[in-house]
Image (cartoon, rainbow, N blue to C red; front, side):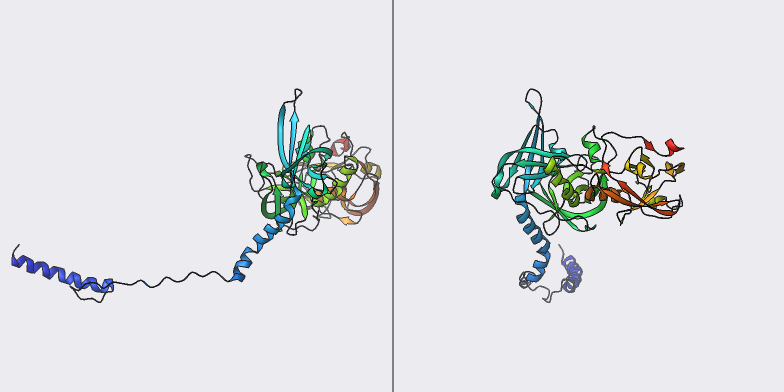
Length: 408
């Protein structure tokens, strides 16, 4: 390598070295050794203030306390069905909760109906046989009874469902997939739903009577949660888990619970006589889904009200028929559906003004008995009339309905 080449190489390198000094932020001169750099001390990690942590954990503490208080009341129920040879053909697992210290357990009818053997697992994994006291397909509620020491039976207090609101916290405790005492939490996402519980459970019962005032929740449910309590923040049972909405066999964010006020009406009657007698008026109403209730039909049919129940027809010989109520007499097509118009619109019962069919059925289920006399407020041809009728027990078989077909 020649001296001229070395000289030219240094002339090229030195400017580059001088350019790198400011870019690196160093102060040493070219040719000097870079001094050791001591990193700044790491900032000491400190916890958030206790008040902030406590506020963030408040909901978890509430759920922890609720679980501690309520879970001893929740039981596991096994329902076995056998064939003629004694071989088990069905092994259903679900949940329930203690109603009283006499050994009565509340659960779902669909869990225990048809079972040959019932077993209940109480507090501390204590397994006892159970006997069916009564089951009601219309409400999907049932009562079974166990013989156990009172200290093993911790009754759960039942609250009220009348004042529930969408958005309110809802907590479920049950036994999904046999996993004892699992807790899930969410909110009430809907009220006033209806389920055809009896139609799904027994083909022999008369169709058309929905389970009213159903609570819709976004609480995660799985097979085995059925029959477990739905709780409010106080730990009161505001409902009983009964079904999930599933198009694929899995939980899809929609679950349902029978309300506490229905339990208050049904459970004592099941304990007393093993069945429930429901009041019946004998009216026929178009299903209100899709805007075919009074609110959705009032403008198209020139109804003077937007709340109540429009009668499509009345059952022949029923309390409504004998009292003089009328079904529709003019068939019209509305939004692609045949509507029987011109019937009476019931707007109140015993002074209670209701919005739709579900509210009327809820009133009858939770507040009325066969043999009760009720006062109805009715709109007919834009006039307000009063009717008195005597409620009867729901019939075992359907009766002929007097509506547009029969009257037209």
